[in-house]
Length: 117
Image (cartoon, rainbow, N blue to C red; front, top):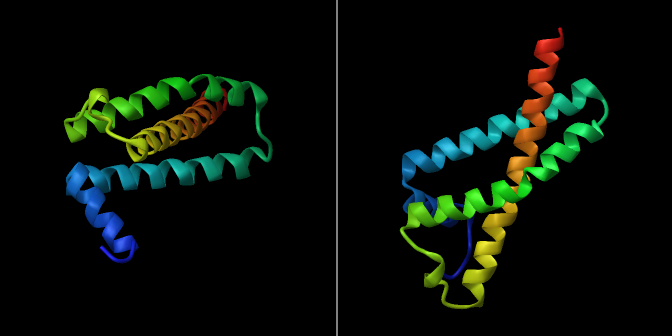
């Protein structure tokens, strides 16, 4: 592999997760991102109370992302072999934490808005 291209990354992720699961995750991420943008535009401000609860959920998301990736790849923490494995694991945890925070904030905003109106 001489160059890292988008097509190469897609092929690698399809191989790791399986084609159906990978594309379901891509669609879910796109839907949650669009809902988050909608909430930000609709509310015109960030609610600090919702933001705090979203931040408190971040460790749960980080652990869940690592467990999910390890279960899909059939690996365990003892299989970490070098610095790049640690970097990838930390990246997965960080993306899981941020994704969970965005999801929790968006869900709170959409559910409270529908309940109150």
